[in-house]
Length: 77
Image 1 (cartoon, helix red, strand yellow):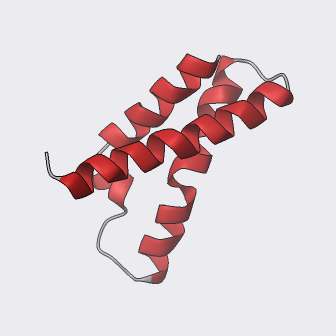
Image 2 (tube, helix red, strand yellow):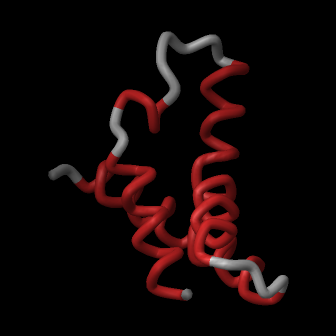
């Protein structure tokens, strides 16, 4: 795994932690945690990929990013 890929996963994990903390403050259930964490983790990159008109959004090409976000959400839950 390259350094850039490691940083991608780390950034998704940290943004998912941020979303999960927001879900915690709102006292959501597990599904809410997973949704808010995933939305926060991949939202910015999705907008970037759509605006740059890329063929495939990064988390659709590699679903491990969503798995990383869900792991962070479960860790906070």
